Image 1: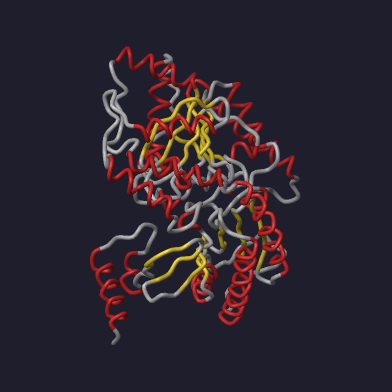
Image 2: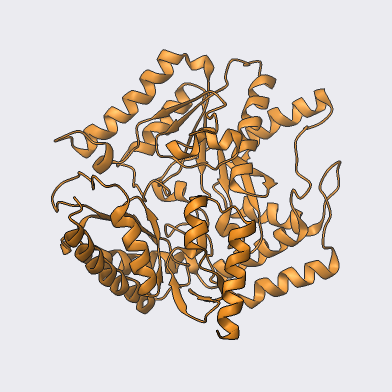
Length: 463
C-alpha cells in the first residue's frame, strides 16, 4: 500500500471512529466513510488523492470569491498578529467590528441602519426571535410572539431557528418546533400550485392564506413573518410574481415585522446585492452570513431598522442592558476577513458577474430540459436547480424518493463535479468568480451525470 493510501485510510478511519457529521446517516457513514478534501483553488477543490473537482455548490452556498484567495489569508494573518481576539461586551469594541458594521449599513437598503453580529445564520435567526420578542414586550405588546414561516423554508438548526425551518427532518425527534410558529404554503407554483392554477391565481391564494391566518390567530399575536427571498434548501424555489409585495403590504397593515433570511441570497448570489432587492421589497430585518466572509471565517450579521433599534435601545436604558451576546460577537479576525471579502466582491464586480454569467448558465441549463429525466430547470443568477422526474411531463416525483438523487451525486463525483442533491433535485450555487467557460463545463458534466442516472433508473426499474 502506498504512503498516500495509508494516509487516506488512516484519516478515514479516524473520522469514522471519532466524528458525527451534520445531515448524515451516521451508520451509513461507518460503512461509506468520508470524501476528504485537501485544498481548494478558485472554483476547484482537490481531495487528498489529488483529484480535482468543480465545486458547483460553493461549499455550502457560501464561497463567493473562490477558494484560497490570498487577500483573505493576508487579512486574517494581519489581524491575528495585531489583535487576535477581543470582545464587544460592556462598551468595548475594535476597528474591524466598527468598520464592518459601517460598511454593511452603507451597502444595505436605505431603511437599514443598524447591525448586530453573531457566528452563524442559525444563531442570527435565534437572535432575531429574541430581538422581536424583546422589542414587542418593550412596545407593550407582549402577546405578539408568533412567527409566520413557510413549509420547506430553511432558517437554521438551533432551537428557535430550527423551529422556524419548515423541513420535517429538522423537527423529527428534536421536539421542535419549540416556539410558536405557523408554517404556510410553500410559495412555488410547480410544487404547490393546484391543477390549472395560473401564477396570478396562485399568488392571490397564498396572500389570502396569510391574511386569513393572521385574522384567525389574531393580529395582536403575530410578531413576524420570516422567509428566504428565494427558497434555497427546498430546491431553489422561485416565488410567484407579486408575492413579496403582497407579503410586505400585509405585514405593514397588521404591524408585523418582515424578516428576510438573506443567508444564501445576500452579497450577489442573484445578481443583486440582496435577494430582497431583486424581488423588490423592504424588510425590517435582514439576516446575512455565508458569503459575508465567503465562509473563510464564521460570521453572521443581523441588519435592522432605526425604528427597531430605538425601541430596543430605550428598553436597555430601562432594564440596564441588552442581555444577549456571544463571546465571539464581532470577532476581530472574522470581521477583518469580511471587510476584505466585501471589498473584493465590489472591486471585481462579482455581483455583475453573477448576473452576466448567471444568464448564460441558466440558458445552458435550460437546454437540459430536453433530457428524458429532467422535469424542471429553474433559478436566478448563480443559483439553480435541475429536478429529475420519472415521467417527462408530470409534476409527480419518483416513488422511490431520493434513489435517483443518490445516484446523481455519485455520478457527478465520477464526472469530477460536486453538486448538492436535495431529494431528486440537483442544486447549483457556484462561486461568484465562475467564468462563462467554466459554467458551460458544469452543464456538460451535468448532462453526462443525467445520462448515467437515466441508465440507472431504467435498468433498476425505478419509477
